[in-house]
Image 1 (cartoon, helix red, strand yellow):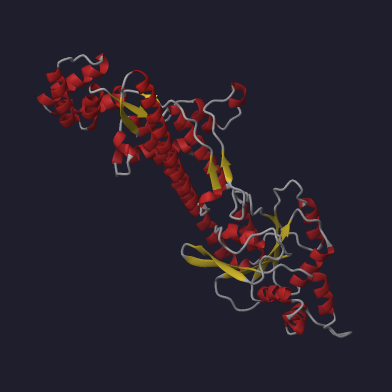
Image 2 (cartoon, helix red, strand yellow):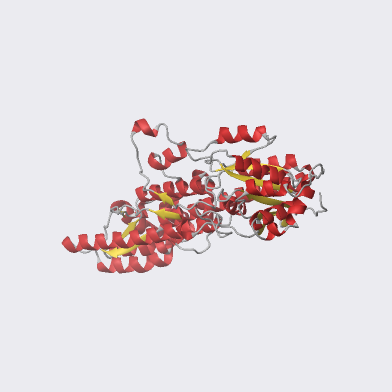
Length: 472
């Protein structure tokens, strides 16, 4: 084998349209690598990419054109050997590459074989939906002549018409017993590890570099998953904290104002959720249109005086010890909350509107607004449940999605409740979000409208961290 540095060089080879470029897209997590198409022979030249492990190059993979006429090439190369002449595989390949045919009729195959000779090993990509044919045997014979280890990779194994057993049996008859199933559209969660582990058994000298790649990618996957869950937790906390203040007119005007307010809030929630989806897709290195959200149901929203929220009372109670004036003002505020609007004098209302704002910040401002005839509209619990469920659905789909997938993820409208007979069979986390108590962190967020913004807040960060466990 030719002299190499520590970077493993892999040729990705196979018949036309078997998913070679798709495999590289998925391994590189790059939807923009190469061109993926149902048309045969899309790749016409060699393209390469590098996989890194902890900032160091671990493997270089080279996408090659499809082998279109292996049967004729094998016959041609046999004709380059004189009767009785003993020529090994690499020499036979070298004679072909030096011929005019390598620059003409068999130009594409020549590109493949040159890359094979320049590589440490090859991944032979197979469309498992195809029947096993003589041309495949001839392709493997040509590749074997390059004297490089070949690892067959069965692609599209998730298709209902995949012939996995047929292919494994055929490869075994050719002495290829190390075979990996790796669907580039829906790869198994441990598929990448299995591929590199199996490859390490074929090229032992590169095992340390491959192991470093496996370990680095596992850490990257954990960090990516945690970052995605944090994005969702931030979304839920900010939606729970959000409150829109509107006037409260009487009669039909009140109904129209409510409808308009709900529609505005709906648009805000929808835009904020879409922003989260976009951020998660970027994190997983997918395109913005790789996921589609159904419209959220236009619920009635929540008319709620969250000044009764225990978190609000607790925080106001903490401030009771700040002085006699603060204590007196807090007493008035608490009386209003637990007993309704009991102060009728205009002077008292004015004093309260000014004094509470200064003493209790946004809590006093909200009490004053309530006295002036304003209401607050917040995001309904059912909407929070739906958002949480379909964001978890998105994360699960991305974990099992290859970067060669062409169909977008359709995120349906997640129901908050299901029939009891079905509920018992559901994932416990999903069941909790559908019908169980919402996490306490969201209850605390209800009392903190300032958390609806992006400003840094230690208590908000604590609530987000707590919520992560409920999303795992």
